[in-house]
Length: 600
Image (cartoon, rainbow, N blue to C red; front, top):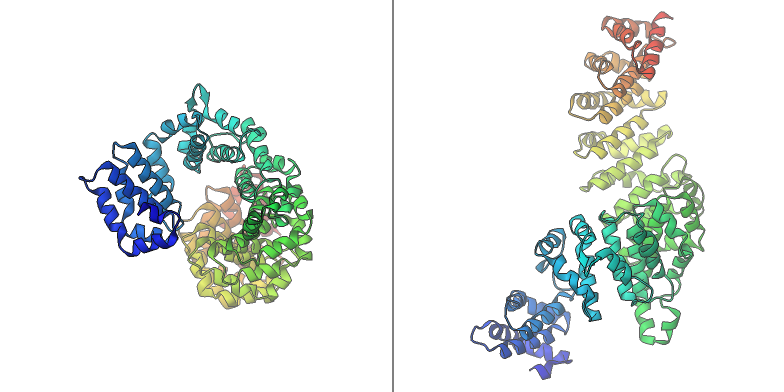
């Protein structure tokens, strides 16, 4: 059987169809089988697993994994090796569900608790390169996003040397590329998990330059992809590393080649390689977008440099409509990162009408793309962004109102945030459109959302809708009753200072209306609440309540005398006298100004 199936997929399939797998597994697990027989069974099963993905599925269906794991308890090394080889073949197949073995933080911890670190560490000094490499790979997987493992690794000694020093030696230029890359990954993951400082020499002078080297066009496609993605992950949270990377080896220009040559120049002679690289060229584009996004996350000058790189905006815009979801996501992330720049929003983003492909991306995209794309739309809708008009005309209001109904809190936040930006200093028509599309029911549903960010942004939207007098009066004449109810509920609820401050600011806006004022003056419950917050222990809330009062008693306005009298009877003037003695200069000034209204 073994000789028949080696290298012959047709024979493998035949044997599986004939039912060889259950029989082989039976012999493998029989107490009475000799070790030689068990080993041969494991070898044949391993050979069957080397075939097509369907073969692997058939093996999994016969519960091969528990049988092979059981085999690892045998005292016989040859049999253990045959079982391990077979397991490795099965687990490297894409059809095998990973949860059958160790993945995820809890599994990293199980391995860690069983002494994985100590047992693997000494293998780094093995005479065999293959063993050293696998040990290195193990460490990179164990340390990834795991502070507990990473903190331990920093202090592990191997032959009197600390692990980070061993990793640094392994990423020197004379080592094989695979070893350099994997060591750089280990150090990157330990740094991101907080075990090594971002300004440590082993990061700044060793890891970062090594990863930049991997991006050069001399390297193979896989190396360039992995180098760029690891570097993107390393520098993502740290502006200093972003600055250093951006001026190392002309990295920004070097990444532009990711869009041109899928193959390194020397590899073009190899036709198989060229074919492979053309099929995987999209991975290069994805990696470049990811790295550009990290490079431009914070620094205005770096963003400018990226955008000025040849045809960069065109490339990103093209990336937005690629068939690969991963490339689209990376392109959107890259744009989002660049859209944090006010300067770029006014210039390059305008010249390339970026909003058009972005609106297209927002139609039926998967959630992970929607979150980033809608976040970027928030930036494009800021008042100083020239894209605001055309976006509105292309049906953005309905789209964003739709997002506010999403199950995903991040999408609800972005939808409402973008509407808030859209309503800022907008004309009455846009405000009316927003209110109509959103519907008051949905607005009030968002005001009772369990997510604090959603609540804050919804209050921000209300505040922006209720600005400038004619707008305030118009909106309050149609929705006044409901808005006052919502305000009351929030001021009575268990909310933090920021939420209550925003709500009082909305009241102050309403108090600034001409006819809208009356909705507050005729509502004794609300007036008592304003009075309560004037005497609150938190200055922010006292100030916000004070704005309401100032707007209600302002002299030049019709009916101010009646309002002043009513508020005096409530004891507001006494509170103003008390506040005019406040140690907080801001509060003290506001109280004095208010008292002058009574004297005028």
